[in-house]
Length: 272
Ligand SMILES: [Zn+2]
Image (cartoon, rainbow, N blue to C red):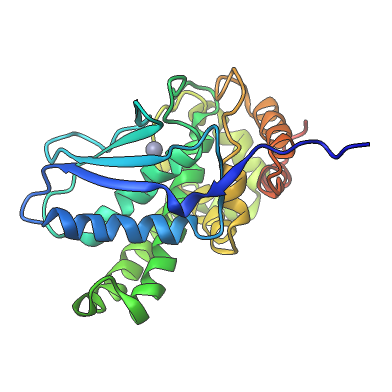
């Protein structure tokens, strides 16, 4: 009997990267160096699903844009277009924005079928926020010994401070103590607030984000699982239990480790 065939993969960190648009007084080559480091640190050891992942990502700088854009736009040639809105050499803010949006791309929210439909998009927002913050922490430790330019080494502590402060802000929202004492009760109390969300609401998902950062810090497995999210027709238009079921099945079908949906199920007390 033959083993079930696995979809073809390629190293995700090799995804092409280009910058276009306006970045204030920051040089485009410096912006590219920062974004390249985010890509490398967020995606080290992650295998991309060949058919679903982009072959290239273009970051388009539009300083006046209200927010970074999710879902990313799909361009020809399996290229994802991510709109960022940072003006000037604010490397921490740039890394933060791109890390979060890169998470949405990894979560397959960039192709023709991309959308932010309720009732389970809130979970993707929490996951990609944690994905980006864990990447920033990895980036800070990498820059402390090998920044893209030697004179950027001092930015390592800014990156770490920015990420730790964001994680602390997430953990300390009003429902943080309720989450810390009983995550499943927290979910039951918050689900009516979470389900309509179509963007990141720190007050609503903060405590879960802070908890998930450690999953993404532990190794590439969590990001591998993220790369199997939304690969079914209903995408996030499923309630939480069937959403986690679909994600778990997608992890199995694509040869991903599949631990993250199980961790979430256990943590939040979600029955299949
Ligand atoms: Zn988002």
